Amino acid sequence: MNQPVRILIVGGGYVGMYTALGIQRKLARRAEITVVDPQSNMTYQPFLPEAAAGSVEPRHVVVSLRRVLRRCRVLTAAVTRVEQARRVATLQPIEGESYEVPYDLLVMCTGSVSRLLPIPGLADHGIGFKTIGEAIFLRNHVLSRLYLAASTPEAWLRRRALTFVFVGGGYAGVEAIAELEDMARYALRTVDGIEPRDMRWVLVEAADRIMPEVSPSLASYTQERLAERGIDVRLSTRLESAMGGRIVLSDGDAFDSDTLVWTAGVKANPMLGQTGLPLDAKGRLPCHADLTVRDVDGVFAAGDCAAVPDLSKIAQDPDAVCAPSAQHAVRQAKRLAGNLVATVHGRPRKDYVHAYAGSVASLGLYRGVAEIYGIKLRGILAWFMHRTYHVSRMPTFNRKVRVLADWTAALFFRREVVALGQLQRPRTEFELAAGKRELP
Ligand SMILES: Cc1cc2nc3c(=O)[nH]c(=O)nc-3n(C[C@H](O)[C@H](O)[C@H](O)COP(=O)(O)OP(=O)(O)OC[C@H]3O[C@@H](n4cnc5c(N)ncnc54)[C@H](O)[C@@H]3O)c2cc1C
Figure 1 (cartoon, protein in one colour):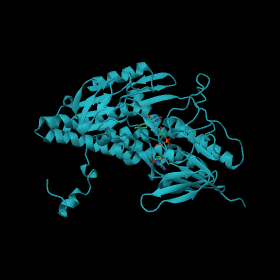
Figure 2 (cartoon, protein in one colour):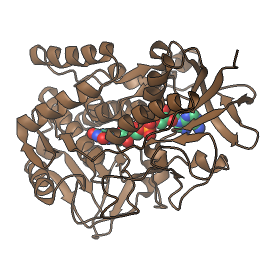
Figure 3 (cartoon, protein in one colour):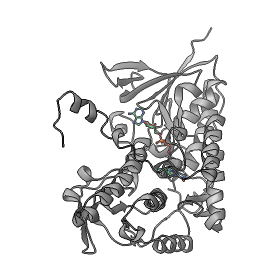
Figure 4 (cartoon, helix red, strand yellow):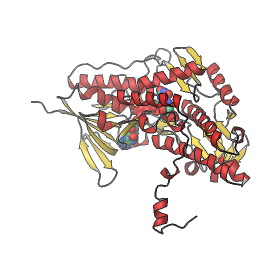
């Protein structure tokens, strides 16, 4: 009998999880599938803004890889190196020695990381918005700033605590600031001495418009709705410095803030540089339309870390590649799964082709914008569309039901606005009791 084909999937996010789901049954007898990710869960990133705002329970926007990938071997570790000549990858678990895992077919889907710029103070003072940990942190942090402002007599401290700065006006930044402002505004109902107008929310965008994913008219509409809520959108403006929490903008404005959220774009995961695989000028794996990596044998890639030709645009632009989005990631994963099955069975692979359908974005409870196949929607209809679309895309029936249950409960009960401050410093109480820390 033939030896099973060893398939190693590096990254258990959108592409990794959906690809593994797509092949685990079909190749049950023919392949040994290993999925490696430093996180034990897949995160449904489009729900991060709602998780940060408390509209959805954070645990419900992640999916346990071990639970859904029953026929795969799931390893919680980071791949630190790939040697394609020997067909081995080096894995580093959270603790202990690194070790090698051999493969026959390799699938690279390590996604993207925040694209930082060398701005003084950014690395020390800023935070990204790509992980469930960051969403939970930001929720607690924003609420804690409101409670600090309500509890200090010092005007400067209060002003700084109530100033929230987001850099980057793509859908992630717009949704994040809109959802968190909405949550903070609601939380102020129970906070004495602070009015919504005391808060300052600033969205800084280097381009001359926000939301490049939608048409200019919808972007202007979104900007107007944000401005109505007092969100200060600064277009054609850059963050120059954030040293010690002092925010300096390129338009000459400067102020203090405890909160700096960086949502100004992503770049391919830099770990690809340790794989020895070919990379394009943007550090992505250059792919053929069938999702195989160019110039190497037996290596596939998809999602944010891959430059996949966009066949729907190739007639207008021969160099067009798919934009980093969940929409492409999930469809590429389906094609990738089909092509892995075809490869194992010695059948021809098919090309990936999908025309971008549009975007949906939530701007807080009952508010949203959407542009689907050129049709523009605004307000509650767009918000409903956003929820319907994303819950339909949310992996697993279990998670769909839980997210729907969160939304249904929110219709009948007041919004939850508790800051779980201890999550940020869980050992403080114990260290005080042990005398390892002085009373404040
Ligand atoms: C806040 C936010 C909102 C978004 N909203 C939308 C939206 O509304 N619509 C839309 O289309 N797109 C949206 N996106 C983009 C979308 O989520 C991404 O395009 C999609 O997740 C890309 O899938 P991926 O599998 O390539 O990467 P990911 O889903 O990020 O998965 C990459 C995986 O690789 C793992 N990994 C990293 N390094 C290693 C390593 N060394 N070894 C092993 N594993 C590793 C990571 O832990 C991760 O699990 C949003 C993104 C964010 C951050």
